[in-house]
Length: 250
Ligand code: F6R
Image (cartoon, rainbow, N blue to C red; front, side, top):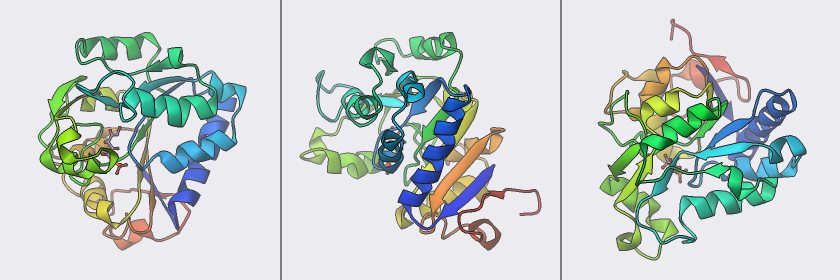
């Protein structure tokens, strides 16, 4: 696990965007797993500055989608990903995949049929969720429909007129689906994420902290700002801008 602490989300996003663009140019990035929410927005803005044919040819698989929003709703994750990633990078909607609550299992099959996800972008919830795998989700879970925690609906109410408008369920890649990506890049910005970041990286591996499942993956990069890093052991949050490998001694 590699951890890089940046002074700001913009610097974090800019360095991650450069790495992804280089990976795409080198032929190692064809299928990108994309997250929604606020956290990856700086990355998408930075990627848009590098708009290249290599990026336009990407195939995108979303992490999750709300259940029950009408088609074309501006907060549906299809709308968000088409608007914030597809249009700026020139990726056709036909290359953008989202899980279907009616046939969730087909999503894992579709990912496999595309050769798997080369790089999965993740955010992390304040409760440690990844995708919409809330605490208690099995580490072997696959794509499925799941209820959203009250705290997740409250956190996402900012995107809707009121909390009553936030869907109660989502269809999400499972933890095992996420772990099947070849490389995972997790972003976390702000003090509100510090507890979850510290627990996921340096706490026990437990289903009560879904992001701790990432400890099992051979190629995970945490790209975080100083506030999100503030509760990590000091050795992991020093060396601003330089990656620290999580070693057995920490
Ligand atoms: C979004 C997703 C969620 C978010 C998480 C953090 O597709 O799956 O896990 O990454 O809820 O949300 P933000 O970034 O809005 O704080």
